[in-house]
Length: 457
Ligand code: PHE
Ligand code: NA
Image 1: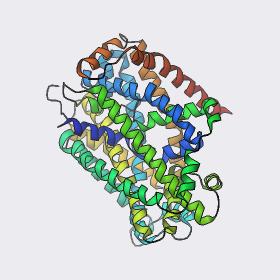
Image 2: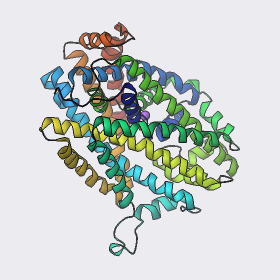
Image 3: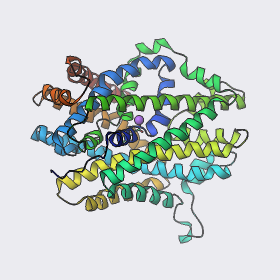
Image 4: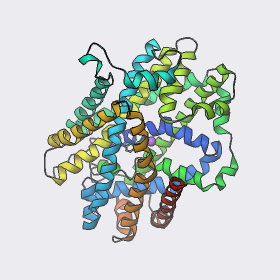
């Protein structure tokens, strides 16, 4: 235990935590969620969720990992024996997410490449669901092997390769390269997007507030869901990453930095995505709302059906715009995939006392094998279904169990509070315990019920 790996520097930890947080959720989930949940007015439930649940829980996860120096099951088990299963629940969710996250990154690699030739042709939607998902090379194995196999292999080789180099030389180093590169490329993409004709209409559709939405409980549920997914909390990740922090670390400040960096990136993404959609509406001579209703503005549809269409219409050199968009998806995705995979690699290696290498081979290998399922014909449907259940129940339940267990069924939050206060500049007060012990459990419980109800109706 004394030989536990450590981050080389504070910046290294922060880049890794941001790498986990900044992912597909920022680029294709936030813009759509905000747009559908009141536009500019969404900022109120969103900031509320960030400040009362997101950052407070992030502080708690950092503290648990830092104090107990183990992966999530081990750290939670050290808080109280009976809590270990909560960690395993989170680890399982992380594992499931990694199986499809990898496939999406592999698609993005293919599309970054297709950008140069605008390979998706005149009808990107049929190309994606028709050709792309079944694309095989007739010359290899009688046309039985989908082309996605090679990029998928690349994704796993990079991810497992980085993990096998360890915390400092692997995860930290990779993120120190990924995150700055991601921010630079993404900013260039956004600048190009906002200078396209029609961009202003897209932005006004995105930012115009619908204040009545604030009275809608669904909007609050959406805000909390976005914050949890986007900050990678209740996934066992941040506990694991914080367990590699040196003794003297300003935990609370680190949590604020991670939270604000992640939110800044998603607002930037909202601007880029909606500027591009405004341009699309301009070329089709229609309105943004009409277009959004017809095509959808989030998820797989946005990235692999709508964006290719936008790219093809861009005047000048469309190829660079397309490449920038898909390359940033790849970078954001990889840094998140690395963090999710590290979660179960660390948990399995600690639990069964096997080396990291073995754990990477077993855990990573298994996830890589399962990810092949999504590379099949029914893959997209399977992905949608799994993603839906994870988002509606998995995360809310994991968060609820975690916060209730720590706040109510251990020795209370005071011990964590003083642990964090001893080493941090910002001092946690009663507000922190109220947010975690009362507000967050109520909201998460309500969120679960709402999701269940909408399932049944
Ligand atoms: N936080 C990441 C995002 O916004 C997603 C993620 C979820 C990453 C869970 C790791 C674990 O895309
Ligand atoms: Na995020």
